[in-house]
Length: 389
Image (cartoon, rainbow, N blue to C red; front, side, top):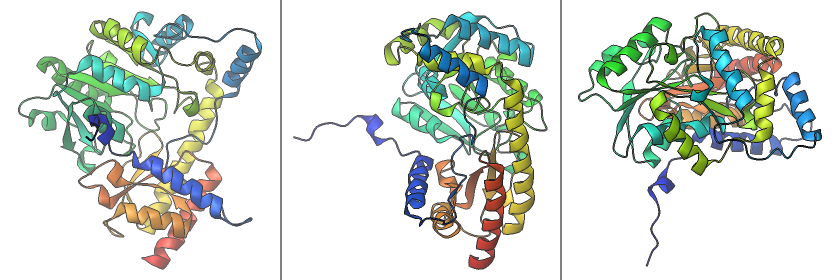
């Protein structure tokens, strides 16, 4: 008799992780001296944790402490520092009791979804979207509801889209700046969406992990507009600490204890050493702002160069992504990205990872790598499209 397999085992892959593997394999096969693969497939800063944060980690590692489990919600001093961050950045008073330190934003999402929703609940989001939203919800028995967004709304949801849903969903996920489109919900738009959710009993989940990485428009936190919103953030992007695996949740009062119980059972706590490093990273503003200046320069270079190579770009307001319409070149973004890697030596993420209906004609480029690589990518892509298309 065949054994049963759980519904979570049918979760589709996060395709960009497969692209990482393909790019690693391609690089390993190159002969000595050959031009290296330029990595534009993953949202991983080319810089590591800031120097002051690394120094704090080194001190902790040599200090003789056990660096064991912390409280499930994290070290008290880190939670207090995160709370102060909301006052510093948004002018918003926040109690440290509402902060849950998590194993990255990736560990925050299942905690939030399990606490806020039940199997069968319908959770809306704009497409294109970050693939694990859908994959985690589906694995937990919840039902993703897609709101097809386009360039007219900067690939973001609107109140009009929400009004068209009948019945209203049980939850809504928003992301600003968003992955993959690199666009933002402006403060008035986020406020209107938060008010819409509160009026209808819809739980708002706000992905704010790219806060700090914004260029021309101001950021706003959903917590400023709704006492019921769940805010997800991370030290991976602005703080350049992807591999340290530490993030946080800002929780509404009614979900604090439920999330704490879930965290105790699912994760115990985020890594102790990562929490020490994260707390120190808050004091490294000068280095972190220098990173943003490099991202801005790369963004400006690519937004000027890529359209000349046949890539039609959406607005690039934040994060470090360009959402490129490649329909003038292909309708099969997965095959297109495989060719781009093999023939041009540039790794990028196919749009089918982020929009299963329309993603065949989109590619996501990440520009958080070294500036020299971004300039070289623009040249390679221009030559490649001119020759092959």
